[in-house]
Length: 168
Image (cartoon, rainbow, N blue to C red; front, side, top):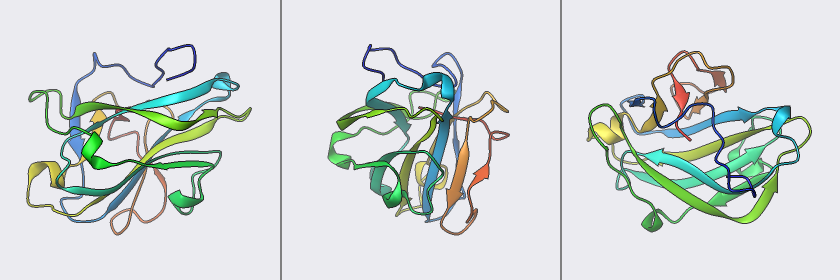
């Protein structure tokens, strides 16, 4: 959310939402790209969707000029206390529940744009929310709509917008 209180994203809540995942325990890094058109905007909160909370650990949000080798090396990283988050599915066509996290320090989008992302580790893949934890809008092939990397299935960052658009 920019300082002018306008939410920004690459899709809207009017789109359906589904779950995406590798059906196993692993760490996910996912992001969208804020383009140069957003340069100079100050961001003070992030909205993202989660399907489950009990199945996750090490939840972080990040901003980075480049897709980071390690999320901890991003330009801005904030660890989120999962006790402050909600998970679940709204209904069959709208997976996940919205979470709004106020940022400890506002982040200004740089001239070249940046990647806006979410990091988490699935610790329990015995539930549907653990097997398919990543919430995506069903709109596919949106440019800069989903960059994805996992600890074992997709080990290098990949433009994955053919799956959908990251719900944030």
